[in-house]
Image (cartoon, rainbow over all chains, first blue to last red):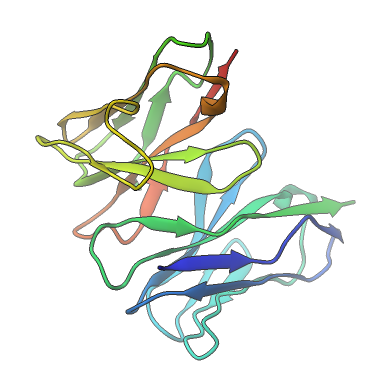
Length: 114
Length: 115
């Protein structure tokens, strides 16, 4: 079945460092891909999405490009801030069904130190 | 995007009791979903709440344990029945916007602790 694999955390960076969180997926059809963020004690917020190959999603300085050839959707940010400390989830909705089911990766904790 | 609220935001319950969680959306939506996030884990879909018909449950989740209601296009409830400590989790509702469910937005979650 469809699945999402993220790099294990925690990822610890200093402020203004470059961030990459790897995400790869397995899916039939043409899934849509998402990054969600969960700040401490809060629910999930949609960070960005891409719905077809080569699309780039971007928001708040974060970017991710839908790479069909490598089945990847890596999250990047050029300069992280302490306020970016959170858990980041990569997810997909199946391209082969219309159930709307979101399949999540295991989440990657990011800690940014001043 | 839709504004989603959940009640309660958190609760502590005794073993064997039940908790009903409400999810309210400020606009009509086609699809509503319920997810569980166990401590330190990712999210798992429990079921899709269908308006006017029975919910569609994922493998491993049953109606007797997680009854769901969806009386209209803006409201749903999830009940977690016969609670055990293993049910301690965050429960989140989400909604799919527009004509498709392509993008889901989540409520703030309900943190349940079972003693």
